[in-house]
Image 1: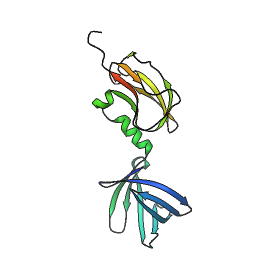
Image 2: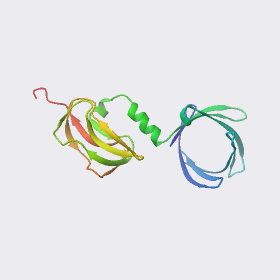
Image 3: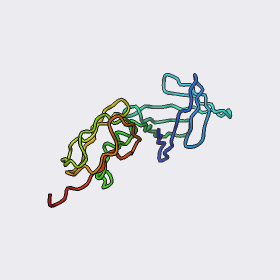
Image 4: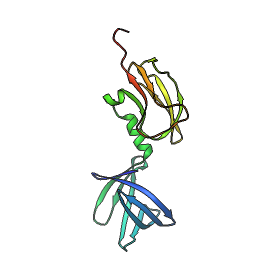
Length: 174
């Protein structure tokens, strides 16, 4: 997941958790910490080299944004997990690249292909159904076009940003 702290963006991965002992990777560096959370949103963090930190987390909009207060500073923190990335990508505007292909912004499984190669489709028409994070999404074309190629089949497990279907313009003399 991504964690945005002010203007800094860090890739954070939970490696292991046993009771209060947590091993995390931030960018490419691994940390072992002991974290104790209090009910009021405060926490105590002790690193493996003995350094101690106290912080207070105040939850904001939607539960994935926080105001983190330490003794000396306050930081806005936003957690951008796979689901949040997926929703952000679904809301983004069209780009010429995305208009020439249909893709899933996150890993998943192809549930149903609703079109065939060479078929003419209309703007807003669903062409493929993908399941990601236990949620099924219909992917639609964003313009009138022709299905140039279908690069997956039903049941395929796909990667994030993998091209599933390529599109081409309808010839003017058609």
